[in-house]
Length: 98
View 1 (cartoon, helix red, strand yellow):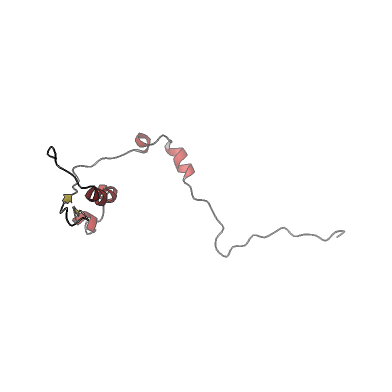
View 2 (view 1 turned 180 degrees about the vertical axis):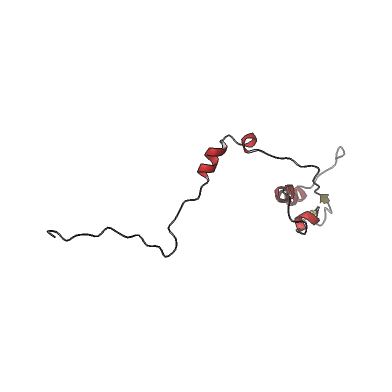
């Protein structure tokens, strides 16, 4: 940006939510793959930004997290629940003296 130029925060606010989706490779017909321009929601601003991928990068879990992969996998396992319609059987009670 040139010195003394201003940047519209509304335009930045419109573009930031799209950045994670633009980083991932999607289907070629998906609109995130075909559209690269983001406009500012303020009509007086008339700012148009273009989001382009300039390269590919692989992020490894250990490079971006303090939690080891095995521990993270264990913590993210879903809680198993009984299937719908399955009932638990309670132990049979015997009558006293029987």
